Image (cartoon, rainbow over all chains, first blue to last red):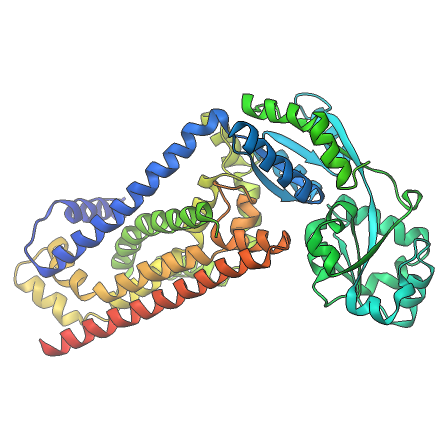
Length: 287
Length: 224
């Protein structure tokens, strides 16, 4: 209680007393500078808030990054409406939404997450499928130049390379919360390579980070989404081969509107289902 | 260069400093030259965020302020907004993380003031508040400045707890350091490079400025 009194007294003293000392002038100057700066920034923030009715915020699985960026750019050209998007792993976004994360549209690489969210009444409905994701084996250029036959869809030579140590590390997304990580784990298990690969795995926070690891040149391979492997930067850094869909459970990509979605978000959600957008999804390898 | 993230970082840093520095001054002034178990306890808890891993703090913030947590659910009932994954959430996180940076330099500065000076001021008839305002604050000026600089610089550099509590939401919680992480994942190394260089420059200039500031006040002190 006494502490509170002193605090209050200090504070009022701080505000009320006028002194002609140099110190006061300096303080005032600093305070003025700080407040004007923050006021200006506050206004900017306020404007952001005013746009909340029109705010479109998407939580998207990181494999749709390049496809979605393209569609958002198209949408901006056509309507002038900005769309904000945060990319990450589906499992992570599921946790965020359950903890109170406030997104308008959710795009998940594993439809089970959408189903779970709709059960918890976090989404309007069970959403729509926008494609099926494919996993690829990516081998960076330096490794590929030495052993070009590593790229075969039956993973036979790749398995040998894992066993004899030519592949010292392999990048995959974290199977704990990234659907592509789960698919990578299932694929490795299907060819009895999981035990051998386990100590060599470099886990990315999401499929996008796994891709970044895979092209960094520090690992000798990666199991990454086709949709990211199709990007020009990735293609310059190495080669890839499709993993047969039978090697893992299908990666059905599903999106849904969240319960509090803005009207602008609903329009963009509809735009994502137009033929033009569907074509872009297909171009990026979503079947 | 992600200007939105830049603006957000700057706003967060200024707001953190504006809230924390006055509190740091009052707390440090209250605690200086007090010796009780309360002081030990308070000092330890105020310095704690310095050694605490950001993930530990992030975990407790998620548990406490998430919609299922005690404070989070209360706030949600009250306002209809959740604390985590919003600007307010990362503000709370950065306020907690920065307590030691706002507190320690100011406390050191107060401790460096000779006790005779305070006694002399007291015998001159200045009450404790006037002593603080006219004698101690001008003498502790250096420490207050460096606390402000460190708080701002550290907020702009904060990464782990902001990512955990804030997610990565453009315009709300995507600060500059998270924008760099995001750009690297997008394989946009050029974008990440520009922002990294800006932060490097900013950090260096801030430290340089605070050093120059300190030296000037030393010279002025010697001249008097």
